Length: 183
Length: 299
Image 1 (tube, rainbow over the protein chains, first blue to last red):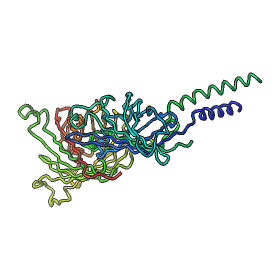
Image 2: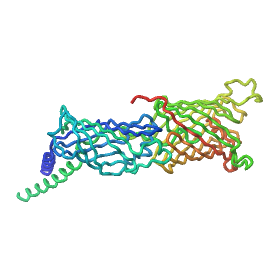
Image 3: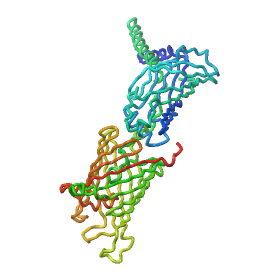
Image 4: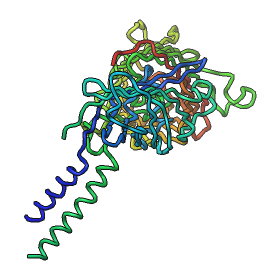
């Protein structure tokens, strides 16, 4: 009985120790777009999870690969089966920070920031550093970014037969609005 | 008493350290488990046909699948006939996904064996995990065929249009076991309005089994066998056995195979397969499937 109380207390204190304001979303937006003269391919995910620690600027994203929606059903099937292998690697995550984060700097005007950290997808983790903007309005952080991703960096094989149809670098658009996280 | 305090302190410390560490390391964990989503098994086969018969896969809503199939003459017909290449039967067909659970299709089998055919295919159970746990997919396929061969010399007189009609009903129960291996069984009933001899029965019951093994991401090996219960077909007819490769190249699936059947409509390969594998009556054949998204359903 005593141990239970102590452990409960310990748990409570442990959380208390790291309790600062955190902001999160479960319906963030990520789009990727591949453009070639032969074919344009786009996929959208409206169920991205993201969390930001206001005290430290630490930032994390998580996206289910199967939640990416394509215009053509067969593209979605091939994306999951042949390229991302989503049964084996169901999630893509980013864990990093907004460099030089200072909560007091942000306001209604978009402010350019640099985000650094590890992007993991298809079982491969890679250190990235990308530019984006941060807006703070109505108690929400809005994070936006456009970045280029090379599938080959993540060991995503593109066979010669379709090489002409898939861009060397994919444009990834990120748009998330983070609301305060209440436990 | 003091000892107990120390114990409490140790317990406190032991709990404090790991909790605070994980809280810092992975903020995503704080959000707890995401709401479970249904995870459907997809792409158990590369296309909606194994070789001749249906697989448990469907065309998605709004997708039209244009299929061209050829079956050549037998390999044992000799070099003079280019081992069968000179002599081809073909089927041209269109399948369409009316909804995600209902497909319809029509086709024409031309050459030495002529048929028109049409089918409806309903997927009433979809293999999935996540919210619900359903280990198998189950489908019902209803197919009708019109025998379009000339009937000038048949003994049956008068020979009505209804004599030309053939019906096939099939249940498909299948499972994608893992990324590489899928298996299905197909209890099948064929009804023929007209048969050549009294010894043959109008109704034929068969059991089919089919599977695939993926060799690489884009190449799979498929096999399909239909066993007709004994005493229903004339002795000249054999069970249909086919084996082949699926090769996927983006929007196309090429299926190259060896089979002892030439007909590409259900009653033809189920009840009128003449070739015997053991005698070398093996036909080379291919199917080409090309899909078009003709309607984009709103999500």
